[in-house]
Image 1: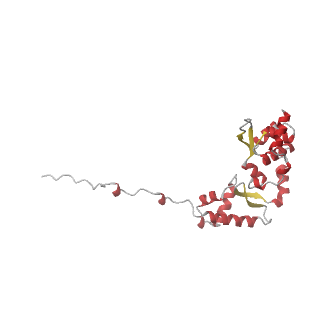
Image 2: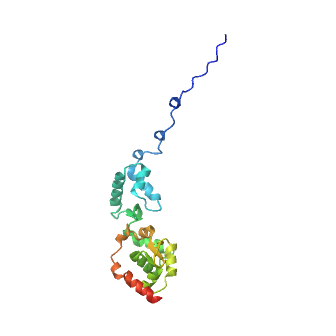
Length: 217
């Protein structure tokens, strides 16, 4: 009598199947501790290529290090490069960190950048930007009331340069209200609007602006 063909043993259930690869098996591309300069040099390398300020949390995530350790290194870098013996420094501006030229070398940088390579903001643009910064959110009509001239063209320029943005609408008039952007803080070297110099009391308050707007109509 012919014996039935014997089949290879088959797994009875999923538990007997080979284990699937888990996230723990994924190899990371690097270990910061094994790099020649460690975490300090790794942070410097990242700050060299960022186009916008990067937060300590983002650095911690990228380098797989505790946020506290990242902050300690950043503070140390700020102290180290802030002594004026380097042409650059590390600063916390606009809610994040990046390299900036040291203020001691501002005349050199200004001459290089502004010598036919980049147009400055006009006095009208700077005045309008100041009004927006100190009285935001603010409408074009109120800006015009402060400056005494039509500001439509200047506002368009500031919008194009990314220094101000439309933030909301006035509930009563429906007018667009403008405010400054994070890029404004970055360009001004500020961490927040609270760092603005205290000149707001010299600008008319909202009630006075409304009177001026009504008179202009």
